[in-house]
Image (tube, rainbow, N blue to C red):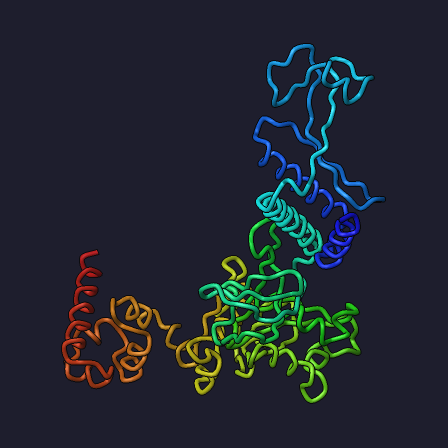
Length: 414
């Protein structure tokens, strides 16, 4: 029995990675709780672990009194002196209990308390181990699923990859190895560690791993914008004129950027040179489209970008993705116009046409190019002609003509 307790402490300390003191404290507390369960709630109990002997002793405590009023807690002086002749009134004496007598229920109770203690100590260890790792990448295996959340095994710790932090295009499989960014570490709860694969910082950290120039501080990632799983833009700058920041991140034949793309399961990454001038930066950010003119509104943080007519869709991107990411990257609003659109917008009469409810710029542009260049022109036009030019239903053309007439009438009244 003596060796058994020492072995339990040794084995559990190694298995759980916990100090022996934590295991001993749990065993002692468990034995005390077991004794109270057996003896009743009023009993005073103490337990001691003797490391040199490798055993736990449990005592029931009594206060020495002249006359006993509560036999659960008190012992008379006469009876106490039969056990120890030197005791005095007010002393406390302990009566040893046989651990075997505590029974099976007591053993189960001890195990429960031990489990609770160990779990609490493990949580504190995990918190202390990971609290300073927020913003770092961890690697783990997909262990299980909790509804749409993914639980990763990081060894003795687990990490929560919530649905909101998952790349929408990814599907995860049990046993699959994943990298993710630690974004939160909780002192309690299960799991305590929360990770993300969608955070812009995750992309930065992946490049930091692959590009020595970033780790050495020669190349700096200034800004990142992501639509996770689809596309990302990253602006970089070099402190050394001899080091091309974009080339360093791309790597020989794209070797470095491809490692990151593979980790993100095919997310396309545009790496562009950073420039403090927003006009130059937006030119870089909208590549491969070419900008012919950029108008900067510093006060409202707005950029008007003019591109050749045949490059408008390229600049805007599929479903507006290219310009949306460029806007996120700069932190500015970006309005992109073709040269033709911009030229039309210099005409005040065209801007008045755009004020008509339900008239899109695309349809207004078609009408303008075919000679209907003002509210007056539209108000006097034949519905059939407006429908044909604007590619509209006849009823829609009639509605636009009516609204043009209303606006003209409202203007005349003023």
